[in-house]
Image (cartoon, rainbow, N blue to C red):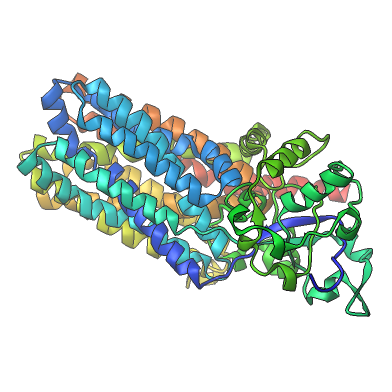
Length: 592
């Protein structure tokens, strides 16, 4: 190793987004994960009528499948995030595909409806949950300036999947029977695992805190006295894998507690990267990735619109972490380390060192080692005391109750009014096409000012909230009166309008959360919101199914879903009132 090792002080581990390059391969991988996973979920309604006839089941039992499938996909978000934070997006996605593969294989041999409820609803639901979270997170981690475009492309896969798999499922059922659908999806889930394999881990940087910047130590390198920051010519220093430093420290002086000044690497034994055996090298990010250390990990919009970024881009990048305090780790010169993903060890000794460091008092979840701590951070119940968030959370709960059931019952409703299976699948395809267009439109428009009179379109945050509220309100009205759309073309028109308007709910949730609460609370709020969405999704379809069984038609089911969607949109018009009252109270407090 050339040059003296850089002494280490306090700092934060921050992934380095390349904003391109392999990131576009990651976007394609995420796109196809959405195509395959969401395509299966959204087109599952095509299977329902056949399964009900096969097993002599009612609507309530059949609806339980989609409620558990979608509910667990969303509700397992905090768990999936914790796994992703510890093991990385690649391993999490492949594991999720494996779990879903098992559920899909068991479904092929089902002999009763409750078998499908467990194999599809529970097992595949958890598997899809493990795939859904990293498919979003990995794109936001790879992109910063082009994030809005990248995430827009990725999530558009859901609509494409619905367009493709609805008629494909209908074709397989008609020609080969319903079991062939699950057999075909075994191959699709293998493709999901291959897509997950493209989610290569990122390089990480050790970003000094402000306190360290003030006490930037001087050391000698090639006979010249330079500071640690000057040696690299930048604030962010490529980081030696923490486990390697911790291993050296444990051999000489034991693992130090948080807050203690870690001595220069030279005092605990220099780590010669080149001498490490290739067979023992792992990849940074495959374990203890700490992706959730970035406060903007769930933010799918353009980072340039975030207030923290506009005020100070450099400071934003250096403080974009979930926790305020961080365990300090060592670093070595970038010219000695090269690519981080080529130097990390994966030995048992490293794991032991990590386990010891986790037990130290006051330690933070810096590299994502403590999964329970990650989950508890994402489910911060204190946010429910925030009136604005509570209103938004209740709205999301109601939206989730009414969102999935229309998709689930559309093919059944189509058959009820005299349409054949192929026409019923085309009704769902209309939803997929419009939903894809809607995601792109809302994603693009939400980042720009609107050409409205009297400067009403200047405030982009207000524009996003109004677009979101109005879209949900329209969606609710359409669904409430869905029974008026009789015939193939009217029903396809409803499906398309529903798909376009509901796209705002999918695209703008994280962006509006930041507008309402700030970037600091996004991870906590998003995790809690996923849990609420999961609860709403679990209860919505069974209630709709019960109403269908009770009435003998799907009219009451659509009315029930529509009212939930309508109320969820209308109630959010109260947010500006809450914000105005808070601003007045704050101004009065400052004045006094």
